[in-house]
Image (cartoon, rainbow, N blue to C red; front, side, top):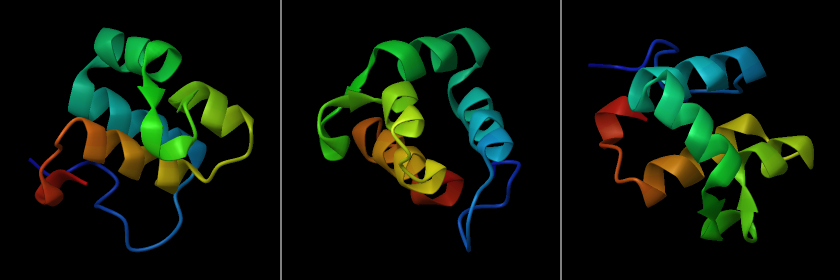
Length: 75
């Protein structure tokens, strides 16, 4: 199933980012991943910290996809 935002051809809004996280990981797990999982690809920040620090949501989504082996068709 494709992500609701239709993939990553361009930029992504923060609301789209959260929608894709919920769609891929579920609401509860997605919230836990954003708050607790440290992303090696983003300097050891959690996704929430990375967003707060100004990282592009697209880059945070890509880092989550890499670390959790999200198939390319759902990225």
